[in-house]
Length: 574
Image 1: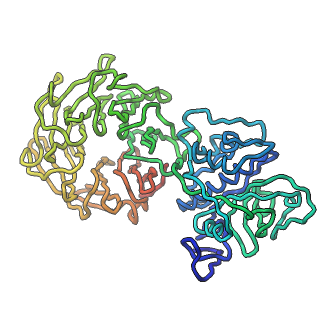
Image 2: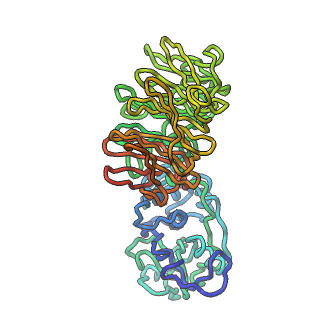
Image 3: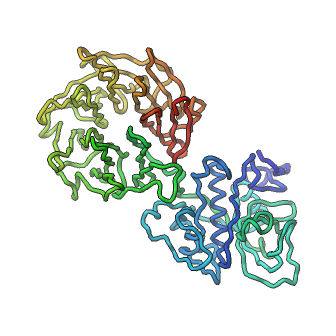
């Protein structure tokens, strides 16, 4: 289980056997301890010790060591935020439990958002978007015995301690520190305890990497009051940024560069167009908390729109024009139309044409024409007689006509067609309608390929079904896939071939493709890309020589399994 950490026989209080020594710089071949920083002349050691412990515990939790390619997902946290906004004073320092309370209540932003300055700094937590970029702890535990302290370190990560710092500690070079008995007292210093040896505690200090052994020292047990009364353990995390913040299904457009919208776990829609995350990426869009996944649309002028519902079901959107606009509403008290609230995810087609269902399963459109937004009820009420929708509307323009496919309450796929002059017609595609195809589960996915209109969906057994229209008649086929789908199907047409993607029960994403016949391969997990397991539905987009399959993985991160033109690979974008 460990590297360079010696385990003793017998059980300890925690989850592991007791160790005679432990060092979080050398566990399973990984170093979880980031380089030491310098507090300068300011007594900010408490902020550094707590953020050091938070940084290490996050890395341990997600198994991301220093130097790992994924370390961008656990950016170092801001000691400047915790100190200057959390009640610290350069002359008198900071109370440990007050600082821990700030980390729990307000959270701590990444260090790149508020870099630490050793003097003259004020709280820089003003911008509203910083409140969305926080990592919060769930609380803290006080440890009062050496055994509980060692158990916490070994089992769960570094902890926080205070000690009396004397002048001779400044001269420490190596070995085990013990106070010489004559050097003058400096101040109380807070450190992160990253391990232990048979002779003492292994501590990371905040006097810079040139001090001690790379900023680390070993202090004898009981020396300078380090373990006389208590140490503090961070209990866990209630929020992490940017790691583990994705909810729902992401959206993207088929235009380079790759641009992504996703909903985070606080309901904010985030825009990502650069990699890795930074102080300026992702960009939070203005608006109320989202109640649906976002939809991305571009018009003929490549003007971008971001649509979604708020938590009350009202449709809101932002427009990109060298930056995202303030939010506007299409429905609701501030809405530009009289349309009722939406249920589920709204769908967008064209430039832009919005479709959604209401609580009764009636379908509605909102379109922009003549310089204004217009609403129409398409089915039920003032609309045409049609089976109520039990799923989201899924539009497709084919052969110059707009088709809107949806699943009705009996599981059958309905084809709602725009005829002309705001006139609509509907026909049943499955279940003895245009075909004898079985009932659907989830939402259908329409596609146009080889000049045929096709609709893919999964049935109650997880089989992937295809119904098609070849311009003369409708037909139906059950695709020859071996693994049952548990999520909706997504697709791209790439270099003239059709590619389908879906999630199965183990969290693997499967790739089903047509190249003069159907083929399939496992894309994630032990599959072609090596990607993380999926927790949410995939969304596929292609441009140039690239295919990107974006999805929320089991760690609530934004994963991307992508084709580079020669091979499949994978990275975690958020």
